[in-house]
Image (cartoon, rainbow over all chains, first blue to last red; front, side):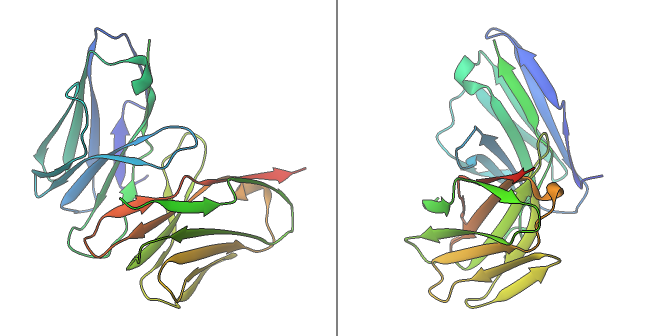
Amino acid sequence: ETGVTQTPRHLVMGMTNKKSLKCEQHLGHNAMYWYKQSAKKPLELMFVYSLEERVENNSVPSRFSPECPNSSHLFLHLHTLQPEDSALYLCASRDPGTQGPLHFGNGTRLTVT
Amino acid sequence: GQQLNQSPQSMFIQEGEDVSMNCTSSSIFNTWLWYKQDPGEGPVLLIALYKAGELTSNGRLTAQFGITRKDSFLNISASIPSDVGIYFCAGRSSDYKLSFGAGTTVTVRA
Protein backbone atom coordinates (compact mmCIF):
# COMPACT_ATOMS: atom_id res chain seq x y z
CA GLU A 1 0.00 0.00 0.00
CA THR A 2 1.36 3.39 -0.97
CA GLY A 3 1.83 5.91 1.83
CA VAL A 4 -0.27 8.38 -0.17
CA THR A 5 -3.84 7.31 -0.96
CA GLN A 6 -6.07 9.07 -3.46
CA THR A 7 -9.78 8.61 -4.03
CA PRO A 8 -11.56 8.13 -6.28
CA ARG A 9 -9.24 6.43 -8.77
CA HIS A 10 -11.49 7.39 -11.68
CA LEU A 11 -14.04 10.18 -12.03
CA VAL A 12 -16.27 11.18 -14.91
CA MET A 13 -18.13 14.45 -14.49
CA GLY A 14 -20.14 16.84 -16.54
CA MET A 15 -19.19 20.47 -16.89
CA THR A 16 -21.89 21.58 -14.47
CA ASN A 17 -21.09 19.06 -11.73
CA LYS A 18 -19.32 19.67 -8.44
CA LYS A 19 -17.01 16.94 -7.17
CA SER A 20 -14.03 16.59 -4.85
CA LEU A 21 -10.80 14.65 -5.01
CA LYS A 22 -9.35 13.37 -1.76
CA CYS A 23 -5.78 12.62 -0.74
CA GLU A 24 -4.51 11.14 2.51
CA GLN A 25 -0.90 10.56 3.48
CA HIS A 26 0.39 8.27 6.22
CA LEU A 27 4.03 9.28 6.03
CA GLY A 28 4.09 11.99 8.67
CA HIS A 29 4.96 14.65 6.10
CA ASN A 30 4.05 18.30 6.56
CA ALA A 31 3.78 19.37 2.93
CA MET A 32 1.23 18.23 0.38
CA TYR A 33 0.95 18.94 -3.32
CA TRP A 34 -1.51 18.73 -6.19
CA TYR A 35 -0.12 18.09 -9.67
CA LYS A 36 -1.86 17.80 -13.03
CA GLN A 37 -0.48 15.23 -15.45
CA SER A 38 -1.37 15.40 -19.14
CA ALA A 39 0.01 13.03 -21.75
CA LYS A 40 3.54 13.72 -23.01
CA LYS A 41 3.90 16.82 -20.82
CA PRO A 42 5.87 17.47 -17.62
CA LEU A 43 3.96 17.34 -14.39
CA GLU A 44 2.31 20.70 -13.72
CA LEU A 45 2.37 21.90 -10.13
CA MET A 46 -1.00 23.29 -9.07
CA PHE A 47 -0.94 23.89 -5.33
CA VAL A 48 1.40 23.40 -2.38
CA TYR A 49 0.41 23.30 1.27
CA SER A 50 3.00 23.40 4.02
CA LEU A 51 1.82 22.94 7.61
CA GLU A 52 -1.76 23.35 6.33
CA GLU A 53 -1.04 26.76 4.85
CA ARG A 54 -1.21 27.27 1.10
CA VAL A 55 2.25 28.41 0.08
CA GLU A 56 1.99 28.12 -3.67
CA ASN A 57 -0.77 28.58 -6.22
CA ASN A 58 0.48 28.30 -9.76
CA SER A 59 -2.07 30.46 -11.58
CA VAL A 60 -4.64 27.72 -11.41
CA PRO A 61 -8.19 28.67 -12.53
CA SER A 62 -10.64 29.28 -9.72
CA ARG A 63 -12.74 26.31 -10.81
CA PHE A 64 -10.12 24.28 -8.89
CA SER A 65 -10.28 24.94 -5.14
CA PRO A 66 -7.90 23.18 -2.74
CA GLU A 67 -8.46 22.52 0.94
CA CYS A 68 -6.04 21.20 3.54
CA PRO A 69 -7.83 20.63 6.86
CA ASN A 70 -4.78 19.00 8.48
CA SER A 71 -1.33 17.82 7.51
CA SER A 72 -2.57 14.35 6.55
CA HIS A 73 -5.47 15.30 4.28
CA LEU A 74 -5.77 17.32 1.10
CA PHE A 75 -8.79 17.92 -1.08
CA LEU A 76 -9.30 19.38 -4.53
CA HIS A 77 -12.81 20.71 -5.06
CA LEU A 78 -13.93 20.87 -8.66
CA HIS A 79 -16.76 22.87 -10.20
CA THR A 80 -17.77 23.93 -13.71
CA LEU A 81 -14.76 22.23 -15.26
CA GLN A 82 -13.91 22.23 -18.94
CA PRO A 83 -13.09 19.23 -21.16
CA GLU A 84 -9.44 20.35 -21.29
CA ASP A 85 -9.28 19.76 -17.53
CA SER A 86 -9.41 16.03 -18.21
CA ALA A 87 -6.14 14.60 -16.91
CA LEU A 88 -4.55 12.53 -14.16
CA TYR A 89 -4.47 14.50 -10.90
CA LEU A 90 -1.67 13.44 -8.61
CA CYS A 91 -1.28 14.17 -4.93
CA ALA A 92 2.16 14.08 -3.33
CA SER A 93 3.75 14.73 0.05
CA ARG A 94 7.21 15.37 1.46
CA ASP A 95 9.02 16.90 4.40
CA PRO A 96 9.39 20.60 3.59
CA GLY A 97 12.69 22.38 4.00
CA THR A 98 14.65 19.22 3.29
CA GLN A 99 15.99 17.63 0.15
CA GLY A 100 13.64 14.68 0.59
CA PRO A 101 11.80 13.48 -2.54
CA LEU A 102 8.09 13.70 -3.29
CA HIS A 103 6.00 10.62 -2.60
CA PHE A 104 3.07 10.32 -4.99
CA GLY A 105 -0.34 8.73 -4.78
CA ASN A 106 -1.77 6.70 -7.67
CA GLY A 107 -3.80 9.63 -8.93
CA THR A 108 -7.37 10.28 -9.93
CA ARG A 109 -8.10 9.91 -13.64
CA LEU A 110 -10.58 12.72 -14.34
CA THR A 111 -12.69 12.90 -17.47
CA VAL A 112 -14.84 15.97 -18.05
CA THR A 113 -17.64 15.43 -20.53
CA GLY B 1 9.91 25.58 -12.39
CA GLN B 2 12.82 25.34 -14.79
CA GLN B 3 12.65 23.67 -18.19
CA LEU B 4 14.16 20.18 -18.20
CA ASN B 5 14.99 18.45 -21.46
CA GLN B 6 14.57 14.72 -21.13
CA SER B 7 15.65 12.38 -23.91
CA PRO B 8 14.85 10.24 -25.62
CA GLN B 9 11.10 10.86 -25.60
CA SER B 10 10.49 7.16 -26.17
CA MET B 11 12.46 4.01 -26.78
CA PHE B 12 11.98 0.41 -27.74
CA ILE B 13 14.34 -1.92 -25.99
CA GLN B 14 15.25 -5.54 -26.52
CA GLU B 15 15.08 -7.75 -23.45
CA GLY B 16 18.57 -8.04 -22.04
CA GLU B 17 19.78 -4.74 -23.48
CA ASP B 18 21.34 -1.92 -21.50
CA VAL B 19 19.61 1.41 -22.02
CA SER B 20 20.26 4.98 -21.04
CA MET B 21 18.26 8.19 -20.77
CA ASN B 22 19.21 11.66 -19.62
CA CYS B 23 17.99 15.03 -18.52
CA THR B 24 19.61 18.39 -19.05
CA SER B 25 18.85 21.83 -17.75
CA SER B 26 20.11 25.36 -18.29
CA SER B 27 20.02 25.85 -14.51
CA ILE B 28 21.91 24.31 -11.65
CA PHE B 29 20.11 21.85 -9.40
CA ASN B 30 20.89 20.65 -5.87
CA THR B 31 18.98 17.41 -6.20
CA TRP B 32 18.15 15.07 -9.05
CA LEU B 33 15.39 12.50 -8.73
CA TRP B 34 14.39 9.68 -11.05
CA TYR B 35 10.86 8.27 -10.98
CA LYS B 36 9.09 5.47 -12.82
CA GLN B 37 5.37 5.47 -13.55
CA ASP B 38 3.51 2.30 -14.45
CA PRO B 39 0.16 2.50 -16.28
CA GLY B 40 -2.65 3.53 -13.94
CA GLU B 41 -0.29 4.34 -11.09
CA GLY B 42 1.54 7.33 -9.70
CA PRO B 43 5.28 7.95 -10.11
CA VAL B 44 7.47 5.90 -7.79
CA LEU B 45 10.90 7.10 -6.72
CA LEU B 46 13.76 5.03 -8.13
CA ILE B 47 16.89 6.96 -7.21
CA ALA B 48 17.67 10.26 -5.45
CA LEU B 49 20.95 12.10 -6.02
CA TYR B 50 22.11 14.90 -3.73
CA LYS B 51 25.71 15.66 -4.70
CA ALA B 52 27.44 16.59 -7.95
CA GLY B 53 29.29 13.60 -9.36
CA GLU B 54 27.32 11.15 -7.23
CA LEU B 55 26.74 7.75 -8.81
CA THR B 56 24.02 5.65 -7.17
CA SER B 57 22.63 2.22 -7.98
CA ASN B 58 19.34 0.56 -7.18
CA GLY B 59 19.45 -3.01 -8.45
CA ARG B 60 19.84 -2.87 -12.24
CA LEU B 61 19.40 0.90 -12.23
CA THR B 62 22.26 3.37 -12.01
CA ALA B 63 21.95 7.13 -12.00
CA GLN B 64 24.51 9.90 -11.92
CA PHE B 65 24.37 13.54 -10.86
CA GLY B 66 26.34 15.42 -13.51
CA ILE B 67 29.44 17.26 -12.39
CA THR B 68 28.12 20.55 -13.82
CA ARG B 69 24.91 20.05 -11.74
CA LYS B 70 22.92 20.68 -14.92
CA ASP B 71 22.38 17.11 -16.02
CA SER B 72 21.72 13.57 -14.90
CA PHE B 73 21.43 10.21 -16.55
CA LEU B 74 19.74 6.91 -15.74
CA ASN B 75 20.96 3.54 -16.97
CA ILE B 76 19.00 0.30 -16.92
CA SER B 77 21.11 -2.81 -17.35
CA ALA B 78 19.87 -6.13 -18.72
CA SER B 79 16.34 -4.85 -19.31
CA ILE B 80 13.37 -7.11 -18.58
CA PRO B 81 9.68 -6.83 -19.58
CA SER B 82 8.67 -5.19 -16.31
CA ASP B 83 10.95 -2.25 -17.09
CA VAL B 84 8.23 -0.87 -19.38
CA GLY B 85 6.75 2.37 -18.20
CA ILE B 86 7.44 6.07 -18.20
CA TYR B 87 10.60 7.34 -16.54
CA PHE B 88 10.70 10.91 -15.26
CA CYS B 89 13.60 13.01 -14.11
CA ALA B 90 13.11 15.85 -11.67
CA GLY B 91 15.52 18.51 -10.50
CA ARG B 92 15.29 20.64 -7.37
CA SER B 93 16.83 24.09 -7.32
CA SER B 94 18.15 25.96 -4.30
CA ASP B 95 14.70 27.47 -3.63
CA TYR B 96 13.34 23.93 -3.25
CA LYS B 97 11.27 24.22 -6.43
CA LEU B 98 11.02 20.94 -8.29
CA SER B 99 10.93 20.75 -12.09
CA PHE B 100 10.03 17.64 -14.06
CA GLY B 101 11.03 16.34 -17.46
CA ALA B 102 8.34 15.25 -19.93
CA GLY B 103 9.25 11.59 -19.49
CA THR B 104 10.82 8.76 -21.45
CA THR B 105 8.38 6.04 -22.46
CA VAL B 106 10.05 2.64 -22.48
CA THR B 107 8.54 -0.25 -24.38
CA VAL B 108 10.12 -3.69 -24.58
CA ARG B 109 10.41 -5.16 -28.05
CA ALA B 110 9.13 -8.73 -28.07
